[in-house]
Structures are given as structure tokens and as C-alpha cells.
Length: 437
View 1 (tube, rainbow, N blue to C red):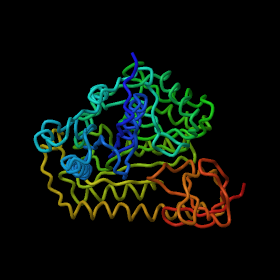
View 2: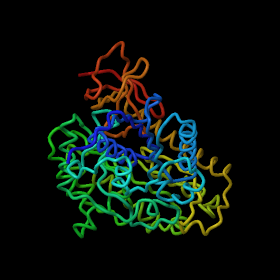
View 3: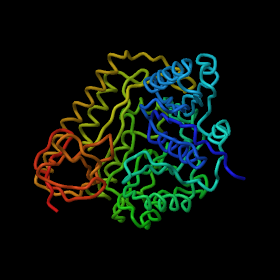
């Protein structure tokens, strides 16, 4: 059947939240483009007549940003400056009924798994032959590869299973095919993402298969870096570390959110792991993969977190000397098991504790970076900013980690290419260098 032409319609897809939402938007945009829609992403131009807001509902700040964005475009819709406004994503999945009552200016709300219904609303066909393809919104040399959807974990503070459902893995064959398609577009770096990487394969293969996936993806021609994000520490499959060591394309980097280090808090969080087990896992990782960069995320202000329990986490950060650390402040989320606990830590204390962790990490990062002065690293360059080319080593992921800055007046590199850079100077979170070759 011939696809209806939508040349007169222009859609602006506005994406909020994490990289997993970005992938969902990229898939949506490719489907719309295949249906002959003119599609833009996060555009400030006012010529789009249809807006789709892909929302985040993870924590309070993310929900607030999503609601404010919906309200902003609802005003635009009410003025008649756009024809249609649709909302999709996590917030819409979680609070659809409330949103329909409170912001009726939106033409329709859709959940996280309702892409076909959203396309139907736009009189667009859901094209099954496009599965695995998408319209990249990242720089053309790197892309996120979502290997699964949903999460089977029961962390007491987390609402993700409410919004994304149970864990569903993609097959190794489909992911390899998707990676080949990305490589043909010029992608050199793949960042593997999921709600929980290490659970990969249990549902369809009846065993954890992340290591096998890494071996398969490493065979894809054109892909030079593969990076791991969002790995759960409990029952961690150790063969992943062996794959990191053995496969040159897999970066010496792992992102493993640990959340806390005090055993009582970990138990209340339902993390299914102790501080001692966590310490043993990190030591084993560093033993198996010398030079491994360890990124983690910590959560401060969980209900009942005492000063002593918080100090346990500070001591743990000092002891482990993680290369990269991020901090979240606890958000009291409806329908999670932690919602039954009293949110008894003030916002001021949460902010203070987050700042304390980051101050400790700043000292660790500064010391680590000083050791890199005089050494040469392979760097992938992402952009030009002011008087600097800005890139990253294999130990750094885009937007969240350290960057390498090289002066444009003294050096030349091409964006999206690799270059060998000698580090000449270092601050807490940035490295400065010059092109060697």
C-alpha cells in the first residue's frame, strides 16, 4: 500500500531524560521520516506544526522538567501556533490518567511501548522492516545501542520497572545487524545501554550472555570502541571482565551504579549485595583488567540514612578511589517500596551530602589526572568548542566524564577521528594536550 504523503507536516521531537529515551526518539523519528514526514529534533525554530514530547519520569527534578516542557508546548498549542501536541515516554506511561486530567490541551498521551499507536495517531504506518534502524541525534561517530528493555530488579527506590516493564533482551543477531547498520553510517563507538546490562540474555537464552554479545559486536567492521553502561553489581558475571581484557575494541571502562556502601542502607534499598561483596567485586575487576576505569553512581539521603551510614559511603569512596563518580539525591517515588518509608532527610542535608561526596571525588580525580601528564593516549574527538578541539579517551563517556582539550591554533584534528595526544596539563576533570600523531 502506498504511504500517504505528509510533506506539509513538520514534526519537532523533544527528548528529555536519559540516553535510552534518546534511542526511542531516534527510532520514532526514523519511522516518521519513512512515512514522508519532515522531522527535526529539539528544534528552536517555530515552523513545526506538530510537537511530540518524549518525557522522563525518573526522579522529581526530571518529572518537573517534563511537566514544564509539556506546559510550555500546551500554551503554544492553545495559541494555535502548532496544530497537534503529543506526549510519550516514561512520565506519560506512569501518570497518563493524571496528565490527561491536568493538561487536557495535549491531543494524546502514549506510554513507553506504544510507538505503533502513536504512529497510527499521526496516520503513519509502523514499518516492521525498519526495526533496528533509527535517525541518529548523536554526533555521527558514536551511538547508543540499547540491548534490552525493562528491568526485573526490585530496588526499593526505583520506579523504572513501573515505567519500562520487565526485562526483555534483544537477540545477539539483531544487535549485530543493528551495529553493522550504525557502522555503515560512520559510527565508530558503541555505548551499550539498558536498564540493567548484566541481566542480558537470561530471558531468551536462559543464561547471562553479555560477554558473548561483546565478542559478536567486536567482529563488526568499522566499530572501534565498545563501552558498557549501567551494569548491576549483584551476581555479576565475571566473564565480562575477561571479555574487556581480551577484546581490543571493548574499552577498559565499566559503569556500575553501586548506590551505597553501608550494609543496612543497601538492605533497605534491596540491592541484594553487601559492602564486602562489592569490595571483592571491584578488586577482582581491577585484578582481571589492569587499568580498568570504574564509573559509579551513588545515592544520598535515602530514608533513615544516618550520618554514620553516610560516612561509611564517604570512607568507601576514599578507599576504592573510583575513577568516575556521579551522585543523585534520593527522590521519594510513588508506588516504590521505599515510598512506605518516611522521607526524613531534608533537601539541605541531601545537597550537603552530595557535595561532600563530589569534593572527595574531586581530590581523587585530580590525583589520577596528574599521573597522566606526559603520557600519550588515543583520543576520539567530538567537537570544537571555543579555541579547543574537545575529545575523549577510552576511559571517558560523552557528557558525563573527563574530556581532552587540544588548542586549535597549534594542532589540527578532524571531528569524529582518532588522534594520539600527549597530555601536557591536567585539572580535576579535564586533560590538556597536543597532537603527537
